[in-house]
Amino acid sequence: MERGAAKVYAGVRDPASVSDDDLSALRLDVTKPEDVAAAAEAAGDVTIVVNNAGVAGFETELNSAAQFLQAVSR
Image 1: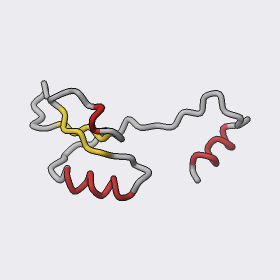
Image 2: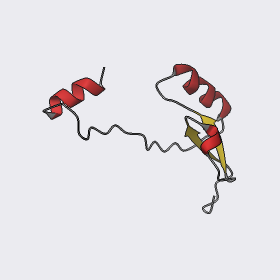
Image 3: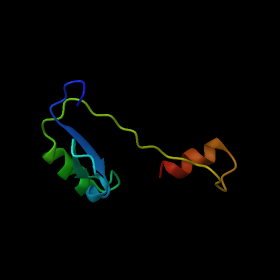
Image 4: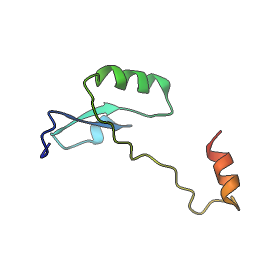
């Protein structure tokens, strides 16, 4: 907002968890196609998308990077 954005969306699993009045919260769980479709419909004015979601493999039973990649790509 400080750099001139007219609107900033926050894609979150629980929109009630967003307390910043400058953000427009959208329910979004990227593992649910219906959430993705609804968010895309609601945010049709988006020009830039920043994705900070990731996968962490800390303290897993997987012994190698190859096993980890196979597990998360299913």
